Image 1: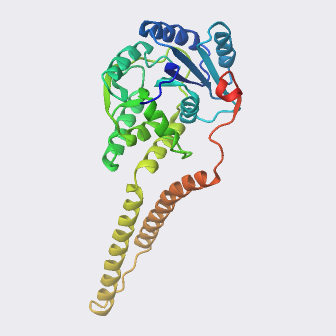
Image 2: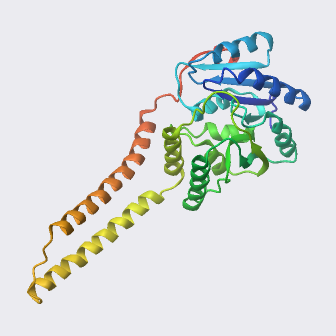
Length: 317
């Protein structure tokens, strides 16, 4: 018989410079949890915010014992902030939701309803992304479709980290110590019974996104290198192809010299071929370097995050 925890639902809210959104986020989450009539905790994970986010969270903690916080010593990243919340949450189930209000807290009612039907993972699928430019929408859709094509894991399309997961999933995630986290892929890898709830993602009300292009590219690389060896396979195949073409050119050069009595000349063709092969070598080295870098991060065994302070008993006790 599985032991039930005292708290029925934990809500993990990573925070980075969301001072203007925290109050509304708290009010809406509290209303949702009250409607569910469950014992709950709201865990705000402050990921090194530079604005007044932490002060807002501390004010909420003073007036509501259901509000907990984890305050990082610096910015460690969104996925690590979610991981910290999952490490210390006490709920039989947990909801992961961003603090920017683009994911509606009211959808948790539908997520929990599906959870009560016996699903261990209920993820929120975006059917529309309001307020985002065409470039970001297109590249996001393209990335998830490419990732799905090159991996054997069934990672749901058009989903973020907004979802409800069972305690079994939380415990499974704790057994994955890799430094470069890609939680939606890890949750898909765990399996169990999963389903979706569709919604329209709203545009951001206040502030700016914590995922600029540079972070999006890194996040995409984390996803690819964590769940696919296809880039390594592709590099090997390209290497064989370039070598085969080079071999054919060598044969043609010999044939031209000995049988046609012509010497192949051309400074332009020489430079182009040299740059082409050099480019392939650099790309290949870069792909290998990405995998080696992630191996190196895991071998160092540094902690994923450092907590400056918290009001969670598991940390302070």
